Amino acid sequence: MKEIPRICFAHLPTYIEFLPRISAYLGGARIYIKRDDQTGLAFGGNKTRKLEYLVADAQANNAKTLITAGAIQSNHCRQTAAAAAKFGFECILVLTGQDLKSKMSQEPLVRGNQLSDPNILPPSGNLLLDYLFGAQIVWTTPDQRENALQDAYTKAEKQSKRPYLIPYGGSNPIGAMGYVTAMQELTQQLKSNTALAYPHWIVFPSSSGGTQAGLTLGARLFGYRGKVLGISVDEPQTVLKERVAQLANMSAKFVEEKRTFTVDEILVNDHYLGGGYGVMGKPEQEAIQLFGKYEGIILDPVYTGRAAAGLIDLVRTGFFSSDEVILFWHTGGSSAIFAHRYESELFSSGR
Ligand SMILES: Cc1ncc(COP(=O)(O)O)c(C=O)c1O
Image (cartoon, rainbow, N blue to C red):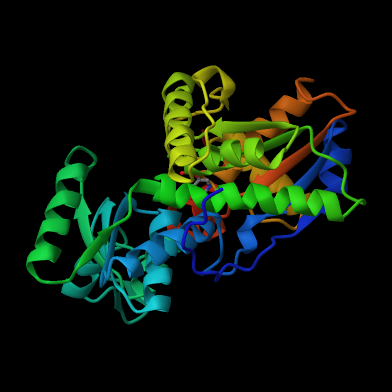
């Protein structure tokens, strides 16, 4: 495999742990977890691995500003802002949502010990961290997102900020390298630690597809013999399979490996889309509560909560048999649990 420039700053290899209590509670397959929620950059997560390659490329291109886009509670944006701070870039985030902070600065939030307007809350969760890391935030709406990103890029160029555009979720062949080498890391761990049971399945949340494309290509290159199953967070199976296959093919070319992937070789389950992107329903609530209560592990409401809800259902319904070993790849995102919206919904009986 062709070597791609990388700056190593993630805390790697991430640990693999057996989850005895949740496995026993569910009474089916043996469940292990790979702790990419502990990759070390600003509460960790899957984007750290991608950013090792993206930041190296930004530096090689002499960029001064990292620019990317996402939802208001985007983990990708939080990690990009942290990487920008760490490596001395400016950071512009194009976020879909509402500008709560400037409303805050127009009128004091707290008068005496009363909220001046109970409908306006200070930034929380990932958004709070974006501000902490000094990111400049451009607000947009879902239908204007592409234009807003393009405008922000053009404006930054005109201002000689030398912007480097990171795609949604850091998912291009450069970012996907993070998960090609993550699969290399896993196969080495499995070889060197005989106490680890060999996983028949790897299960994780999949959305912009970079994680799954990287793992899929890595599995082929480094000889992982199990199955790589993405639980879709927001897309129908057909769309996500196509996206992952395309990116895996582009990534193979990028590292000069003659490997090709058809859509049928990409495993995606889209049965757990619930109320749509970012909506925490009963299954996500239950998954977050179970992982918390039985293992002391924090899942997030958007990605890992949904993927774990899928995993739990697949164990309960016997899709995974009791003699199988499952590796749940924790991709991070736990800081979103502290967003006002999710904090107040986690134990609510709605939905
Ligand atoms: C915590 C978390 N898990 C999983 C994903 C999905 O990864 P990918 O976009 O590479 O499919 C994301 C994407 O933002 C994420 O933040």
